[in-house]
Length: 178
Length: 438
Image (cartoon, rainbow over all chains, first blue to last red; front, top):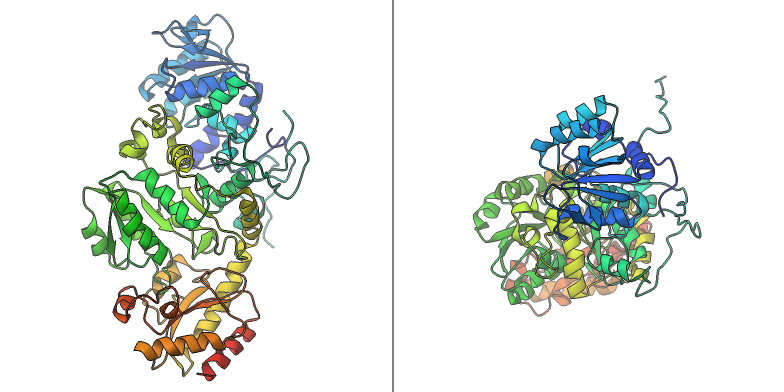
């Protein structure tokens, strides 16, 4: 259950980005389109520890109906899915590349995402590497920086609201079903 | 004529305060489309299946389990207040005292200290001195107007600073930006009690406060019908080096709240651990009543503050009145701070003293004055739509000697008013006739 289509509220809280960068890499309409359209999400840096943020996000996404593909060179299987050492090894198309690696590795991951023809690159909350974002955006990918996929899904599907958080969504339109 | 800029339908808009006051936090649900906020008067929520139940308990999914932890009606109040205070999120509690206690118990561990304003609401001071002592948490009080006192009171054990936007009953105004800068330089959060101002008059987070607490019982509810409290987080404080929020929590399978939930870490811990364990939750029906009040907050605060200024001016000029302590008056020592932090009005609560009435005579004349009033309700609350009055020396503080009263800033002749929505001429008439009868 989430807000009706076309929600266009300014979502600006909790980001290290400048207003201009927020407009480019945190566009609420791009985020909503990605969450609606993506089916396969490669989680780069997914941990084997169930108490890490990456596990919280990946298990949430699985539960929300997304196919999660773990990218972790040190593990064989996470959350019941086969692990791959890098994006190039994944033998199927990837819609969204969600990154949980340090900023210093983001440029390399962005290049891999472009080479693997992924449709979108998403650098997680507090992970800011504008060069990586620029590189992916120039190659035609949708790019999100310094946001959490789970929080954004929760923002538009009611979950974040139930936790008492400020979704910044203001609308008089009725929620849509499902 | 100015050119009107035509915006595209998809241009994100930042909505104004009044719009958020009636809309934020509530989207009409898909099932019924109910426009008013429904009251979810239920203790518990059915799980989809065993797997979902387990994930909810592990905080790996969002959703409701039990109304002690979260409830859909309460969530509307929480998100709406978060929106109005420019906070990242909120947690509603059974009362303002509960909001304050949940904040402290989430942040502090035995051995920690808090530095607090001596001008806080009396109930807050009692909680800090006596109840926190039982948890081996220390408190040092400072004159909130003296920056050097704040600074001198901070020790390596100090884990938070605590002040109030407008002190009760003497109306001291906190220099939020200055104290917030001090807190930031020490790497500790500043907590501000914003009960007396409400977000309609002042938003402490915009001036650098980390956390905000409220007694929603007062102006937020506004009608004297429901108790409630709320704590809010700016989401801007770096808790990564603050052990109680960052370290693995033994109360939640070693979960690291800041690492896992980022800017929601403090609030998630406050909800999943402190509210769970103290049980100080808000009832959904009270949440509904507080939401009804919130929808007219700015209108009430504007009118009640304007009437309070009018009444304060009238009393200041009255021959039976010795003094008036209202930060909206130029005679108040914090008038300049009120102009900076409270440009829309200095609130609706203030105190004054009846002339030539010190010692026992002061207490007697204060009692006589209150008994002579016809419209002001004599009770121990503030923030109602009805005007309220209390004489602390003969009620809430009657066990204290004159010396103890003055140490707490409460002189024997002090009378506190909370101005409501009555016709202001009627209020002036009532005060005049009660003063005349002395």
